[in-house]
Each structure stands twice: as C-alpha cells, then as structure tokens.
Image 1 (cartoon, rainbow, N blue to C red):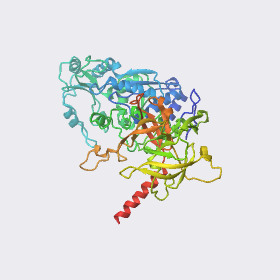
Image 2 (cartoon, rainbow, N blue to C red):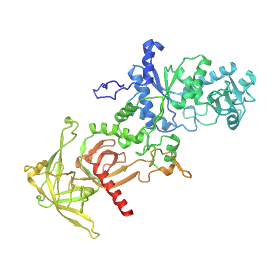
Image 3 (tube, rainbow, N blue to C red):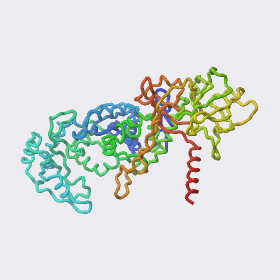
Image 4 (cartoon, rainbow, N blue to C red):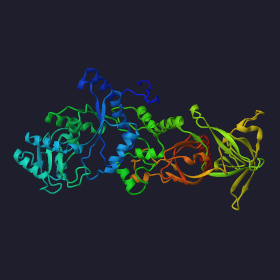
Length: 579
C-alpha cells in the first residue's frame, strides 16, 4: 500500500513513500516514544570504491526515512581497512550523496572512534571476554568449524587476563609482526552462528591510514567497529542489507557487554539488477584493466557513471520508491529502471533535432538562398517551455535510416516516389538519388509542396511518416557516444565452465559517431545538459566537450517500433536462408 505523492519545497512532485517493514517499525517506535520519539539513521559506506546504483537504494532509505520523520541521518565512513581506502573515494561519496538530493546531519568516520574502540577492547579483555590469539588466519579458519560441525577452542583462549592486557598493549605499540596475533572475542565456539565463534576484533596491520596516518598499527574489524560507532552516534535505526542479518547477534553482543547505547540493526534486501555488475571488487578490476574509461564511464553502474550518462537523481529516487523494501532478496528488471528514467526525462528534457548518421537531402524546387524560420515545440509535456526557431533551407541532413532506395515491406519513410512530412517543415516527395562511384547513395533529391508548411495538408492527403532534419548550412558538428549494456547476460556472474565472468562483457557496449549534425541552438550547451533528440532518444552533454566540439552521450533510447520490425524481418530472412 502506497501513500500519495508528496511535494518538496519548490512544489515539484516527489516519489511516493510506499509502506515497508522498516518504516512500519519506525512508526511504532515513534508512537510509543522509544528513544524519546527520536529517529536517527546513518548511511555508512566504506571508502574503498565509488558508490553504485545499489547504494542509491540505501541512500534513499536512510536519508528518506530521517527526512520523513523529522529525524537525522549521518554520513559515516567505515574506514577500518586502510589498505583499500582513499580520499578520492571519500570525496566521490560525498558528491554522490549530495547529487542524490540529500544532505547529512553529521559527517563521521569510524576512525574518529579508534581511541574509544581500543579502550572498549581493553575493557572486554579485563572482563575476560576477549583474548590475544596467536593462531594464523588459516588456523583460525580451521578451528572455526563448519555449518554442521562446532569449532574448536583456540589453545590461547584461556590466557590470563594480565597476559592478554600485556600482549594487546604490545600489539598496539608495534612489537609484533603483521598478522602474527589477533584480539578475539570469547563467545561460543559451538554456536550455530559462525559469526559468534570467537570473532576477531583487531589485527596487526602496518598500513598508513588516509586520516590517522601511521598512528595505529592495529585496526578494528568491521563487525567490532560498526555497532559501537552506531552507539556512539546515538543511531536509533541501523539499517543494513540482508547479508548482515547473521551478524546482528554479534552487533547486539558487543552493545550488551559494554553497556552502551542500544542501537538496533534492521536488514533489508539489497538491490540486484539484471545486466548489471554490482561487485565493487569486479568494478575495480574493470577500471584497473581499462575495460572502461574510469569509475565514471557511462557504462558503469556507479552513480558517477550514470550521472555522466545523463540519469537524473529524480529518476533514481522514483525507481527506488517503486522497487520498495523487503526481507527477501530478488532481482529487479533493468527495464523498470529504464521506465522510471524515461518517465522523468520525458517531462524535463527540451526537444531538439539532431542527425546522427547524416544523409544530405536536396529540395530541388525550393528557392536557392532562401532561409525560413520554422517554429518548433521545446517540450510538449511542458507548455511553459515555449517554442524555438529552427532554420530551414534547400539543403538538409536527414538520418540514413530514414531513406531506403528499395524499401522493405512496412517501411513508410522516404523512398523514391514516396512522400513524407518533415518535422515542423513541409511535405516532400523523393524524386531520385545521387550515388558515388561505389554505388552508395550520397544525396537524396526531393520536391516540396509549399502549401504544406508546418506539416499541414490543405487537400487532406495523408502521409504515414514524419522524419526529422537539420539545415545543412546551419548545423553544428558533434560527436555522439552510443552506449549499450556492459554485459550480455542478465546475470553477469553466470559463467559457463571454463570461462570467466569477463567473457560476459558486451564487446559492442560503445559506438562512437563523428560528424553528427545538430541544431545550431545546441552550440551553447554545457556539460550535464540533457535533451531529447527527437525520434532518437535522450542524450546529455559529456564533460569531454570543448567550445569547438560538443560530445553527447546517449542516456537511453526511445522505443523504436520499426527497429523491432526490421530485426524480426532480418531474423526471418536468416531463417529462410537456412532452409
């Protein structure tokens, strides 16, 4: 059940707030005055990569719930692994959260709490609930047992408290080699939950931290730092994805043993999207091996990548609202994201005419040197967007696919003898073609009916197709990058025996077109500006653009009925040849 859409301060329609179990819990907590009716959430990414679309769901949930209930939401970087974390990632995450339309109430780092976490670890040792273990990482795994067999206690588990305090202090002071000792919690090696079988709290790791430098040579594990960080910040609702559900008992154990603020953890389903890879490790591999041109490559599912491609935060928020929040992991169809994107872009995108694969069209009976200003609608979805003037002349460019010398069945665009409507212009009829020495059509010849300006037909005759154009004398040149899915399979991780996940990459995920022809009004477009190229799709200006040459990225195409028909016909022809 969903609520009605709300509006923001500017009066723009926001995505509706669908009911979900986390929201219902908050409603109940507020109603009974839990934590004084206070709602405080947090978004806690590790700064070891760029945020991707999966994080968008968590951003919308954590910040959205805080906003709805007049609460607070922190941005906290869980920076407990200095080997993989960088300032570059911190800055990109801040940028992405703001782009999504949210602002944090507090900016924190787990590293802010390293001193307090260490003191709490000392307290656990003094209570006899933590000990220094000399087992190697491999031995710890062996002793842990399996899902069906209990683990074995470490031979170092019952060290005297004073010895543990001495060893842990010396670990901190850098007296032992990396990996030689760990501090572990003393819980239950027979627990059916493997996370409770004496988990590691600290490891020795000589690595320079992006904030604390070389101050520390021991670092807390995520499971140890996370809940206590929530507690220190007074987080009332700690919202995580489902893979942390088995970690919740450990989260609660630390809070209980230390007697600190009782933050609570709730788990929801993570976002899995067809044709999309959301593993940070594998996305990093794509960047490092130069399969893509950086984290913000428009084929990447990173927020910086899809932003560069032309996605809007409004479309992402709408999508996240539609997919909802549940306790069961599933896979969302990419088509639902694309539907949300088209819905948003259709309302906001100015319309322009652009010819990506130009073919010259000459109107033989149009006066040479004459220029007309045709009135074109900027956005039929937004009357307030008004109109613009577009130059019309004797020589135009049209799309190559809008002409066929020998048209197949069902083709209604331009071909010899056929008449079509030029968008905002006149009706023209094809009278012939000009070819080069290779027999390729380089120019289409037409005549026009001067009584049909604006596409009107006083005599009532009908044409079955309208095509777009740009004036050859006034067009500006641009490059256009056409993007497709980066992966060929719905599940990029579905790998056949003997193959690697990279074998599922789409070799045709990018096509670059040069010499495209655009309306002259686009000359002043800036990086990030989005448009609908009429009949072609939605495009935005790429940061690679220069004053001399614009570069456009295709955000998403329009539905093209003819392309489907043509594809089906080719398939039928191929099948006929096989017979």
